[in-house]
Amino acid sequence: MKNISNHITFEEATKSQSAIRAKIDNKPNEIQLANMRITSEKCFEPIREWYGKPLIVSSFFRCKALNTLIKGSKTSQHMEGKAIDVSTNDPIENKKIFEWCKANLKFDQLINEFNYSWIHISYNEDKNRNQVLIKK
Image 1 (cartoon, rainbow, N blue to C red):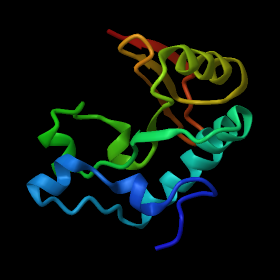
Image 2 (tube, rainbow, N blue to C red):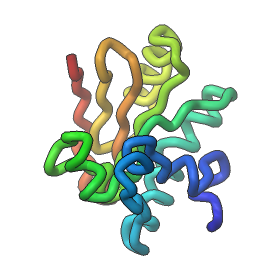
Image 3 (cartoon, rainbow, N blue to C red):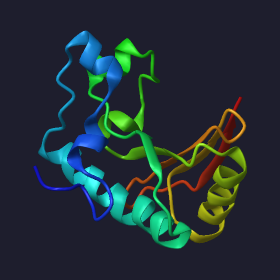
């Protein structure tokens, strides 16, 4: 399978230890895959270019079965391929990324998850709400 974008492989966009353990096939359909490519282009790649260093993709696509297993939101944009969670494993650096995203990107939701443990960013073509949220 081709890469999702310049810096994200299909494998890292769909890999989940929870899915592997539960034998869930976490593969997107064509619409979800197209959404993943748009989200990568509009959100992840600009962050990666600005930051200039590799980022950890902790969650991107989640099929419905996986999302249910991990008790994700019933309306999670991860299930549509419209949301990605990224981290540097350093809350200080994650905060810099969060602030840069807030000032420079168009997005649907930008969420500081658990005191900058990771950053959630989503993109919803033509319906971006530019919501900035904190999840404690």
